[in-house]
Amino acid sequence: MATPPDCPTTEYDLQDRLIDLAVRISTVCDSLPSTRVAKHVAGQLLRCGTAPAPLHAEASAAESRKDFVYKLRLCLKELRETMTWLRYLQRLGIGEPSEIDESISDTDRAVAIIYTSIRTASRNEKLKSQ
Image (cartoon, rainbow, N blue to C red; front, side):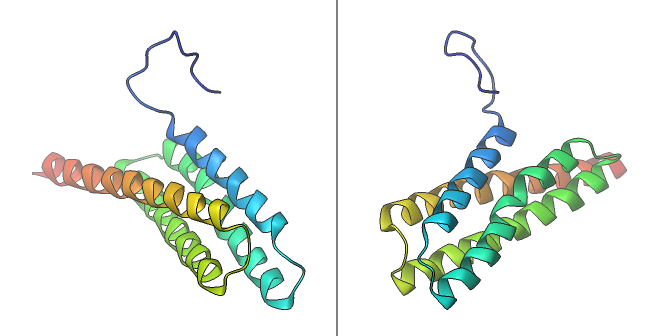
């Protein structure tokens, strides 16, 4: 659920952002033509593009910092695969270019956020074990 505009928050809800990305990816997949290549790409993109939100939810309920980092790494892996399929669509020239470009941009931001979270959690784990 989004935070109302009159309620200040210290962070944007990453879970909502990842769900929004999954919705955008779903829309891109549904708008692709019914060619053999497009159907194949749509299936792959739909799987990896909708996986980060539930993986992030699992990470949020991790049993340890090590488990948290592991689950975030899975999330990052799926985001990188999503980026690859989107770039492939872009180069094929199929699909709505503006939707694909926005999806690439959203995915790139999510990669940066998750990567930073992994780096921070890993660094904190090392500091804790010293």
